Image (cartoon, rainbow, N blue to C red; front, side, top):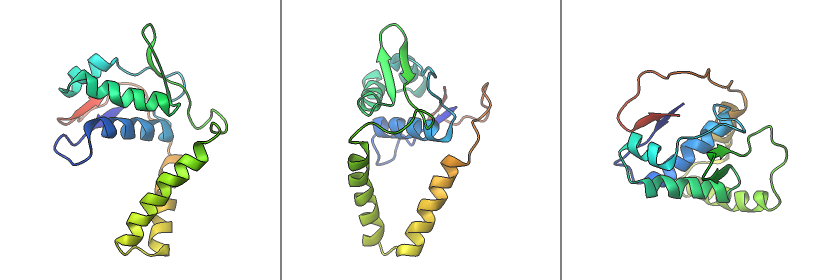
Length: 146
């Protein structure tokens, strides 16, 4: 898996790392039990401070998607096949969704456009097949492979 980040973008690097890992889990490129690089290794690969990676991993741990410990490192704890979400997930997710939808409406996007976008993005995760394991090619600066 290639992790692509915008080092000059407005979204904090730790949030980009978190988001790309969530997307990889949602698309099946990372499944329950998959190991991630250590915080230090990923930081070296990306050329960033390891505390930035640690912040992303800790956020994913608190969200219940990663298990992190000193011996096994960071491991994907759940994926789409793990069953129903933990209690409280839906309410928290709907709060974040409300804000995203409010942004779309505030920028003038109407129901059809927003719903079409939602369907398209959801389909990109639910219909994608897990990528083949092995080396990825064509990495750009700011990319790292898992």
